[in-house]
Amino acid sequence: MLNLILPKSYAKEIDQSRLATAFLEGTKVLGLAKSTSLTLRITNNRVIRQFNHAWRGENSPTDVLSFENAFTDPETGEEYLGDIVISFEKARQQAQVGGHSIQSEIELLFVHGLLHLAGFDHDQKEQWAEMTKTQDQILRKIGNPLQGGIQYNPE
Image (cartoon, rainbow, N blue to C red; front, side, top):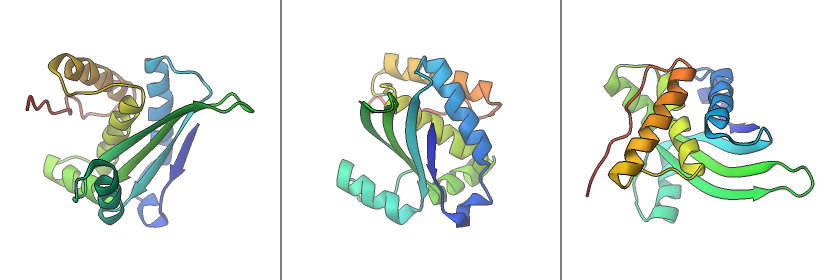
């Protein structure tokens, strides 16, 4: 289940059904249980900067953060992966620079965050290649044109 926290001010620009589809396709590709859930919060630069500073020591806004908090609810059997936070403002800026829609950018960031919650990373070249391949596979399934979007930085 996708728990979406979306301010009304952003709701008119985001197709929530496409995010639900991205979640379902992502869980299928990753082989996750149907009872899997996570929370996606779409917010602004100020709030994501606070999270970024508190958890990563970076005092600047970023586009997406993932907070793994995997557990299984003993009462419902629901497998909770964690939380994803996306800055709408940062996503809009990146979409404008890239010449594509805010919807496509939000979907890309959401899928990227989902992969991090599922244990993927992109620090090493092999990890980067596997994460890029899986991210692109999910994006293709939902008809998102943004592929090859993970930047590999060998530093």
